[in-house]
Amino acid sequence: MDKAWLPSSGPMPRPESVEQAREVIKNEAFDAPNVQEITFNALEFTAVCPKTGQPDFGRVEISYVPDEKCIESKSLKFYLWSYRDEGSFCETLAARIADDVVYAIDPLKVTITVYQSARGGIELKTTAVREKPNS
Image (tube, rainbow, N blue to C red; front, side, top):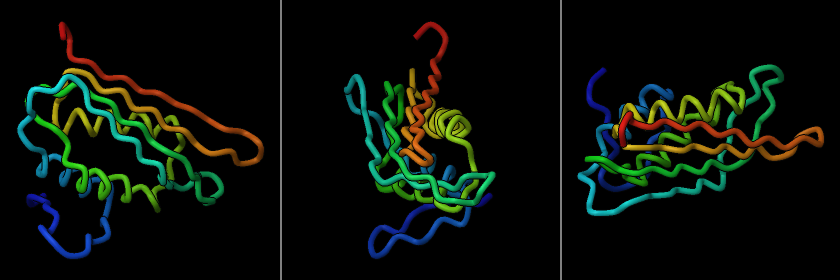
């Protein structure tokens, strides 16, 4: 895949796929300053139930300990937007997002928590953790 980048100004294009958006967060990463932990809270996350096709609303918390690179927030918005039409279980989302953060910036540690809003009276919280050995 060619290097995927976001425009420096103007409206953000709609993601073509999760794979394309994953490349964007990798390509837009920047050198890590001297910080110990970074946390993003995406309050308006949407995916699609793979069984019913109904939208699943919730939020995603991404917390990581950077090594050499950091995630640029606009590219993260683009990446999370790519799930809007993606059919995926909450458990799969947490695992995939964790793996994609590792792919993009190779942090010392990343913790992804997906909070799925109640549908049918059931809320769901799923956490995935990835950590470099000996870090």
